Image (cartoon, rainbow, N blue to C red; front, side, top):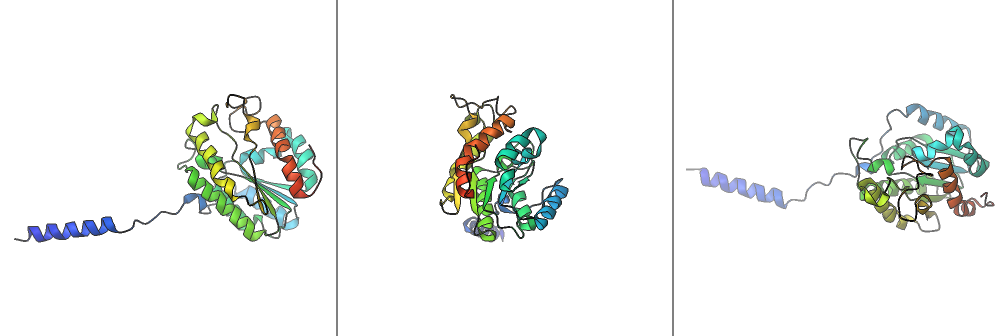
Length: 248
């Protein structure tokens, strides 16, 4: 009768599998992926970068891209255009998309004085994406971007911004809390020599911690008044890193 030996062999195999180390999946937030629907924008930015040198690269998502809208132009013209800036914001962009963009031409031939980086809110979006990421994964994606920038632009200062708050009560919803935790996790990336951390989020909040709807009407994107507040809040640090006079 062979039943017992077979059962014993299966038990040994099961124990061996249970005791073997499980294969750790790579962090999806650090795997470069092109952003669907943004191919033309990326090509246009690469073409512009191939023709011109910029002193300030502003990397981000729709919050950054919004500076290209007419109603945001007064803020752009006051704070960023005089510094020969290029807007590398992509609506809907996530850390993995930013990595792909930067690895595929958006840094070629550039040696800017400063890069501003704010990315990650879309990684935490569980409503509009098939997958969303934890604060640890998002922070890992941001760390990978910072490492790439340091490698490709060794003489450039990086101004790393905490992800802006999200939701009517930023500390009362899952996405908002993940972004708060992400900010805490990426703060140590700043060495205050090459990488500098800036958290301007309190500027968008009421005294009770709720979002100021007069500045962020949809609880995600600052309006022009909010964008002006953002620019003013980081101006002292930005002007110091740029080596010019404050414009606020």
